[in-house]
Length: 88
Image (cartoon, rainbow, N blue to C red; front, top):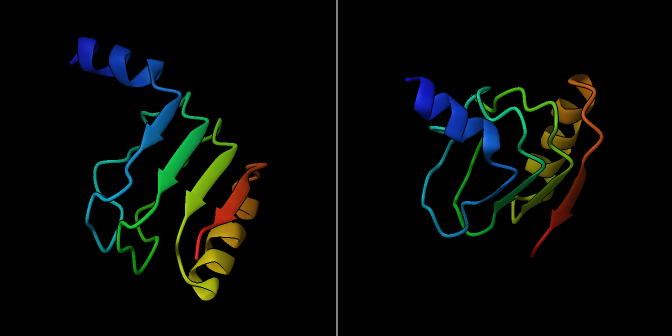
């Protein structure tokens, strides 16, 4: 368990492009140093379960405009200064 947590704490960039899922799974609050997250062509339909990631600064996704506005609102509520790039 300690080794797993130490490994997760070291991850700063995570590319989940083409990993098919309709909602966030497996991404937890343990990724405390994660600064960059890419979710292109994942198929997300909601951001339910999106963890609190205090170091997150850049999110790249192909979410719809409505979903992106929800994501930005969620990041704002958590006081995360992030850049959200929308890929169409």
